[in-house]
Figure (spheres, rainbow, N blue to C red):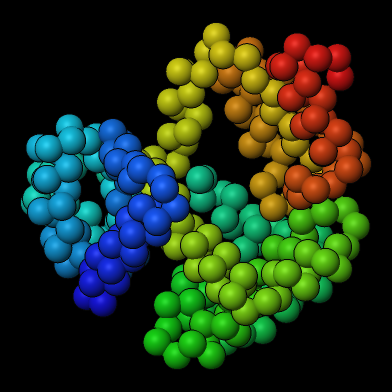
Length: 267
């Protein structure tokens, strides 16, 4: 419960600083408010009075991201609409963390497996989630660094030493790995594995550009190809000499060119 008094104190501090700077205290826009629960289901119950107050006094539209196993607590409360509770395609997870990328990057995959005992390697993501949420911070850091470095090692056609250094830093690795793994073990909080493609209807009549590296092994090109199939107006740009990273020169060129086209400027 330490978070409640801390948020209270920092809210007061923020208001005081704003007054001394001569600025007005802006009332936050709560039209759409997202709650994210990363702990046990009791947190949803504790925050329920705040959610009800937002609905009553501000007419807020509430959204909630929660562990699939804990969703019963929200269903009992009846505060957040069911359609606003969010529980990636499993094939992609298996490809990257189980059997697929290991055929292309066997060296990087071997390093990913090192912190995991052989008996637990049948489900790498679950094994990492267990360690990333372990009470011992040393266990968390070891798992986070291995997870983060694995992805950094597979993101681009050419190795990027700066990216590897950044991903190996304890604070970065821990935040990156825990957030990413949290979503993976919960199936991206989607109602069904093809939800994003099945509900792509609202994209119709909206122009867009999909830029994807031909040799992206993190999120394979099939994703972009499948999205294009249900979003006919999209302009799919497959970049021949690129992997996953947005910072790869050929990817950046396509992104800048697309931005210029939509702004009315020549590419």
